[in-house]
Length: 459
Ligand code: ARG
Image (cartoon, rainbow, N blue to C red):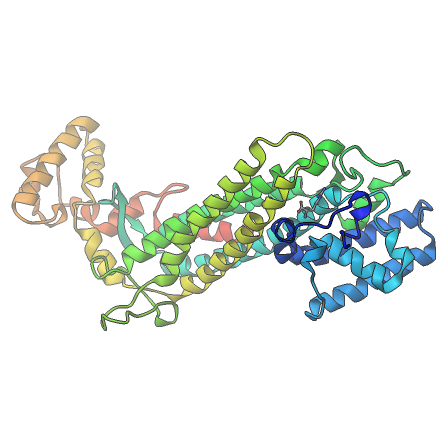
């Protein structure tokens, strides 16, 4: 009869094959192997330092784990679902390789604090990689924004043409979102970077362990205060999933704009062929698939957040096997996020801007009407009166099938006699954006300064 060699002592019956497969996590948690080994090496070193392991045992363990890691990296390691998870696969192999010393590695430790440590180490690394990808995307945005400071497109509210804006300014809005995303991740990383090891199964351990030392060896900023919390808490992962969901929401909004802009109806941009696909039936089509996929994948990341919140919501303290379900949403989110950020960093430089179309479109919809109202206020009108007069002039322009900026001085003066020749500049797109000349405004010189300041934050 075979029972699990790690915990089979009190069992008389072998495990049902299907239940065994049902409970096994090795299929997906094997990606934790490098972190599991890193944690074990530090744990063994600490155990040797407090005299629980001999120096010889420790060096055998460390060497054995090193060989196992090499095998795993070379894809030569044989993973067995019979051994349930990544932790027991590695431990069993270590015992096979080095014998009795291997059996001592798990002293003063449980898989509960072990797995909690592994996922924190994993997540810390993922957050670093993700922040790096965000930085790449921010850099591509800066380059494009810099080249498009003087390009004018209609700014929208309610997807109705509202006021002209600099395209560089529009792009920098996404830079700002990403900058906050980095802040959120930095914050989440700080809370992730605490070490559960030492909590053992839930209550702590009877050995005189030195948790501070293990934490130092693993580069953790601190150690978890409470053993029950240490093994069962996954809120750091939920925080990550929520920061990831917000990033995906930002990328999805940007995707939506790229998709709209590259349609024949907008025609503001063309995405280079290298990031688009064709249609198998309609020969004329060039589809912005990558942007659509990012928009679609936001759903999957939100789903992962909901999954983990739900997994955690009714769990009594401390560890429950439910927690094993934290991994797939977590891994999937990190992979999805990295891929979406990468594809965006490719897509942004592939944006070819149709300045003429943007300009033409900004000319439609009387987008400088507010500038005219402000002009009248400067000439002494109250804003509400100015608003009403300009409203009438817009109605007139619509009747004439003209844009407000195309009305003659005589026509305009019918609505307010204070209007003079200098109104031409006021009603122009260039005049309109240059007038928003304050911190955070769309005036080209302000946008240039914003780009410069943004560049400094990346250094
Ligand atoms: N595979 C398990 C998980 O991911 C490891 C911890 C198992 N602990 C236990 N007491 N069964 O959560």
